[in-house]
Image (tube, rainbow, N blue to C red):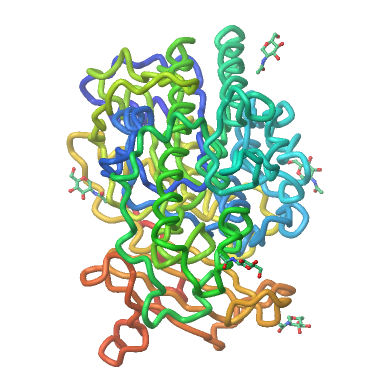
Length: 547
Ligand SMILES: *[C@@H]1O[C@H](CO)[C@@H](O)[C@H](O)[C@H]1NC(C)=O
Ligand SMILES: *[C@@H]1O[C@H](CO)[C@@H](O)[C@H](O)[C@H]1NC(C)=O
Ligand SMILES: *[C@@H]1O[C@H](CO)[C@@H](O)[C@H](O)[C@H]1NC(C)=O
Ligand SMILES: *[C@@H]1O[C@H](CO)[C@@H](O)[C@H](O)[C@H]1NC(C)=O
Ligand SMILES: *[C@@H]1O[C@H](CO)[C@@H](O)[C@H](O)[C@H]1NC(C)=O
């Protein structure tokens, strides 16, 4: 089995976990909605995320990981099918890839086909019509997807307003004793996953669990105790809380998602307007509190994995479905091509390979969500295995397959609508091997990673779409380069001859992507060469590995 070979390669000296040779490794696939790398393990020293930090300390932590489109269903469909949005044809929250593209074998489906018990808990596929109304059951999952009973209050008025009346607000700390349903979805989903793990520890069937957390997605509904972790005096504004100079209007999104909440809606913010500094701080505080609440739920699952004796034989991946703008560039939510919207936290834990043996044992202190005070802020555990390589969420399919020893999909042909099993990503196992062996000899990796975002109009308005546009963006080591071009949503074809706008950011001078220099005469040679690289696309950026 591939995993055995892999282990032999990777841990030459201390190969004590031959456990994996006997039974097939389980997979715990953790996905967090709207989580940007605002975590202790990513150097955010004010964040309280001890459980995720401890997972990071026994994982490879990818410092530069990107999604293929910065919104839920397109991103999720991409990493779950191992293909990019142009191939899944999913750019919105409505369509279903099996109807508009092809009958692709998804990552969990691949494990199901290989004898695994597969279970979706919470938000893995985007629910509703975007996954056939069933979260892609029965294709992907052995059992119907589980959704917490309290998920029915999503979109309802559950947040106590200043006058005590319930509102539908973005900032929404709740009292678990009085909140409708008496709990919150992530807590109930976590309870289910713990029960599922307990059952697997008794029946010994290999499993693939997709555990999808709802927070820190809006509304920021979390147990109010988590606010105590983030005193207002510690909250800072983003470094760039304004509309960037020279940003083409097509690149901007008026963050209608945030404006749909009662508290923000009441502020009457215009299309290009920005949230006040005072409310920006409040929203940033609640995002952090919601992330800590999610961290506690992650800790409960990891603790159960240890408790039921499954940790030694379970591969764990952890990632966000896209980044999140917290007033950076004056923007909110996702829906753009900026780094802050496309970059995600991504961790890959392989027992016995990425784990530091010294740290085994008491790994995951669980901070009770029901009012117990945090003792003191735990120190973030720094990961020892950090990769700076440019990687993509679309790479997870081949990576997890290779780690678990099931068939690894090969690279898709140009037109793969009729090919059920292939990928447009690359396995990250060479990077993991390079980091865990004492003689790392991987010399090169992807020179660029790719994302995209559609727009209906050159200038954002609420009118019906008239100018279908696709913004294709590429992140290289030193630059981000974007072209907003014509795109036909009937034929699914891009017209590179019709360019509406371009963006170029040079990180050596402008790490936060504040100044678009695409039209500055001095940078035209650079822009031309990056344009050629963008148009050549991901296929030309696949790693060339010498076996
Ligand atoms: C899609 O593929 C599955 C097997 O993966 C098969 O059972 C099903 O019939 C296919 N559906 C269509 C419409 O081809
Ligand atoms: C665990 O097993 C019990 C007993 O068979 C069953 O009632 C329960 O639904 C199972 N839980 C999960 C989450 O699969
Ligand atoms: C927002 O607009 C409404 C209706 O036009 C008005 O009643 C309200 O006072 C405005 N609020 C602010 C904060 O400007
Ligand atoms: C592989 O590891 C070596 C040293 O261990 C490092 O110098 C090199 O940059 C790594 N290669 C990649 C592509 O990360
Ligand atoms: C897209 O292509 C179809 C079919 O060729 C054509 O009828 C339609 O006008 C095109 N749409 C746009 C916006 O160019």
